[in-house]
Length: 299
Image (cartoon, rainbow, N blue to C red):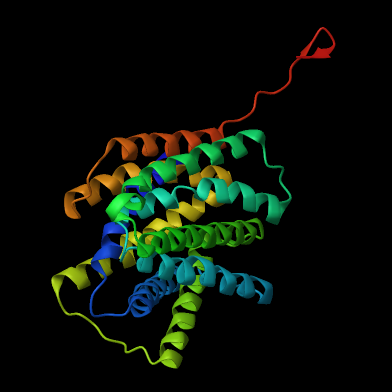
């Protein structure tokens, strides 16, 4: 069952990055995110109410849902969508794969779990890989402040995503299932962004064309309702650190999609960087060998 959830998450989230790119146009980024998670929340609540599976959530749980909505369904996607204006969607997926490292570090902050040496080593290798991946964009004539800003926003979005993982883990330890907490979190995320749009005077425009409507529906149903439920179920079953391992495969799918639709060009540094990022993620999840007593001594 866990393998099926892994494969489902990788396939869906490996392709949503290009859908995010297709959302860019006349509709403001925060408004598109409101549409996405507002519709996803309505679908989840309808399914849960019809099936009578909506769990009661106390005040503490609602506050965590609010924070989860801010991290998972609000700020991080504003960062990702804004970053996609300046860097290829496949490279954003590569940055997102560093969630493995952030989850391990946040588990230390949230749950006081010790950060193993392999996590530090894997994180260092992964960061070197990221530098290689972005080297063509950061060197020579291709370098620009927008590229650096896009990279920074993608990293910030990944950090917010990781924080949301920790909050989901807390909810599941309290007995709340991802379907219920996702429904409330998406509703809160959409509501907070709606308030921001009203205050800032951002118009609630809409594009009635195949590109926008098709990408929106893909992001709502597979990308949000199915993808987040599958991934956060893994978080509850395996912990946020191990669940994030599926992000190792995202760049492979996303970069090939980016090469097909965005004209992304594979280079030697990019290939080396992708390998290093994946190796770094594998190192993060490599379990240290247990010390086995030999002759009364630890070996």
